Amino acid sequence: MALGQSKFVEKLVFGIFRISAFINILALTLFLYFIVKNGISAISWEFLTSPPKDMMTKGGIFPCIVGTFILSFGALVVSMPFGIGTAIYLSEYANNEFLVRIIRLGVNNLAGVPSIVFGLFGLAFFATYLKFRVSILTGISTLGILILPVIISTAEEAISSVPSTFREASLALGATKWQTIKKVVLPAALPGILTGSILSLSRAAGETAAIMYTAAVFYSPHLPKSIFDPVMALPYHIYVLATAGTEIEKTRPLQYGSALVLVVLILLMNITAIYIRAKKQDKV
Amino acid sequence: MKQNEIKIKIQNLNFFYGEKQALFDISMDIFKNQVTALIGPSGCGKSTFLRCLNRMNDLIPNSKVEGAVYFDGKNIYDPQVDVVSLRRKVGMVFQKPNPFPKSIFENVAYGLKVQGIKDKYLIEQKVEESLKMAALWDDVKDRLGESAMGLSGGQQQRLCIARAIAVEPEVLLMDEPASALDPIATKKIEELIFELKKNFTIVIVTHNMQQAARISDYTGFFFMGKLIEVDTTETIFTKPGKKETEDYITGRFG
Image (tube, rainbow over all chains, first blue to last red; front, side):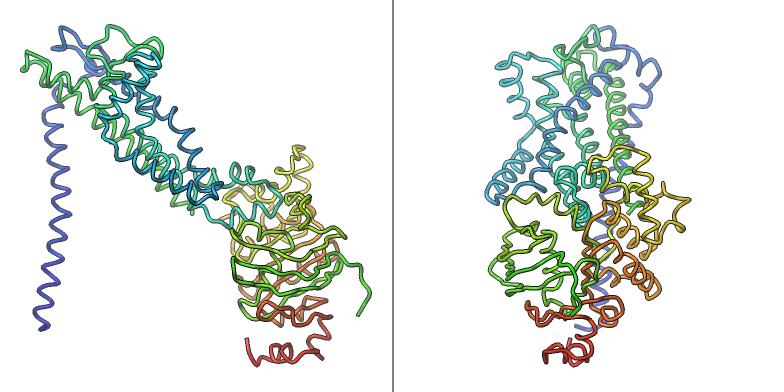
């Protein structure tokens, strides 16, 4: 190939890659512009702090924000002990190759299950069979299982990236295996575990299909009093506004306003995760 | 050979990584309050041997040990032996400095705390004592709360030595403790080893023959997983009994 020709190919390839990256940014920018442009007019102090009024055509989304927080943090509380426990088992204790492979297969498959299936499972198992009904408990249990694979894989990665020299140093000082894990491995892995947890938190916050049969209600006159009460939640509220209303002109700004709030919430969670990761990289 | 008290007696030790045999029928004595150096070319098994003495090799999957290692007359590979308490008596310093990502104080206090010592005053006292013994106290006394990761390589290694001696082991195993350090830091570590032998029995693996000659009382020469020869350092370096030893110390291979 002539030199000129290969230089041309080089430029062409570089250009193609640059355009793909640019399209990515463009899509995100367009999306954000669209949401902000349509939603910003609905945002006010009252919108954020008051409940919906007049059949959803007026008022705010306060109960939905509260509900989303309860559901996503609740899911994390349910999921983290099992997720981190599994990760510790897989990376520190398990010595049966076959068993490890089975567990990994299970985790990976769980990650691939569509969220609507989780929703139906939650309805059948937690709500009906265990008689939790449509409630926060059912919702956070369902979401908890949904985010379990993310928590397991990020925690396992964080734990196995702790240098083995730390473990050796600790064991050589006469620490037991559990002391080593508790005092050296987990503290060193903590930023990575937290990053994964926050990312799964935002996943749970945005989830609609998994909560529509299990925890979320169309309208609730009061905030939940216990974990056996159902809640309103942002993603389901958006769905309801977009599909169930008759006075579309009045509900549309509220719908975009809710979407904007949800996007900002998730963005804030992700930024927190990135911040924690960056801080961890400074330290090493 | 001078008559010294035997601290560790190794008898017919074989070690396997899976199918591959790494140590062949090793027998030697390690004497109390003496420095024993283990020399030999890379991959000759000297580090593997060292790690058999505090059962660090237990961590390697599919590894297998045969033979016996008597520590004060008791076989450490006896099934009844508690590995955790063995490692409290046989401390280890690694090739690369490996302080925990914690404060300087917490690093030295770690071994005491995992033993269940809660008396703050006692811990503070031990930390200071150990840092002084490791010749690090003057460098760090004003910043004990700072991260150990901010220390220089040489300081980190002395911190690891302080951490190891804080739990008052009887034996200190050192796996090329100065190989990652510059000459000045190396000299400090060597001076330290000379001081430490008053209180501890030291076994040190080294790549550096001059280092072995400078700091040790006894030297063992390993080659291809076998202990070719062990004797006083003076004998090994002046009139070695085996041809392989002579070839190695005169620099004909390795």
